[in-house]
Image 1 (cartoon, one colour):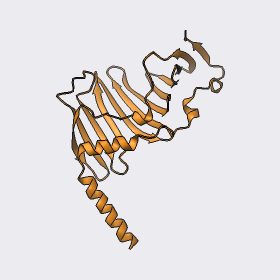
Image 2 (cartoon, rainbow, N blue to C red; image 1 turned 60 degrees about the horizontal axis):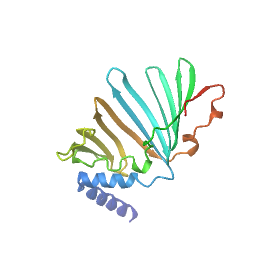
Image 3 (cartoon, rainbow, N blue to C red; image 1 turned 180 degrees about the horizontal axis):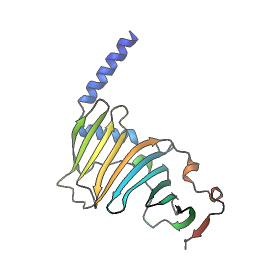
Image 4 (cartoon, rainbow, N blue to C red; image 1 turned 180 degrees about the vertical axis):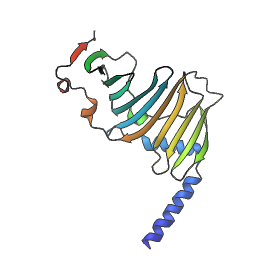
Amino acid sequence: MRRLVSVLAAIALSIVAFGQSAEEVVQRMEKAMAGHEAEGAVVGMDMKIPIIGTVTTKTWIVGDKMRTEGGAAGVKFTSWQDETTIWTLTEKDGKRSIEIDNKKAGTKGDNEADLLKGVADGYDLTISKETADEWYILCKKSKTNKDKNDPKTMDLVVSKADYICKSLTAKVSGVTLKLYDFAFGVDEKLVTFNPEDYPGVEIVDKRK
């Protein structure tokens, strides 16, 4: 009996999922990805930049704190930031240095609950492809969207299992961006800069 109930439940869920529009999928995705302020979020990003190549980063976010690791052209970097300050560790040719600077006025780190909030606002949505596990949604900029900074199209992939975004790809000013590997659960120590973790590394304080 239990097995029969499980099978019928799975069939019912698949029917409900099949009947959803692209707009409904995105709304459910935003809801599923919101509300994780306490546990924090993780996201990977690739940036394909002409001439330079691909810059790969991974970012951890908890509240107003954020840590980003990445590298390109033989240089590795790690940055930490809170509401007022940015610490940046760079590593090249075996040498390491840390710079401390004020965060620019008017800027702030993304909150994990807002990672993709409103991401499809100003776009016409269609399901371009569907598999047993994922929806592939094409986001085309609406004629009424006059924001020059918004990409013309975005490709969004959403998991059918939990409505978490699997990836988001867009091209902005010649740079192709791909966000992926969204996850939740971050230790605040990871996003907090601790100078004791880098003994002997030169620290340059540029704050005024």
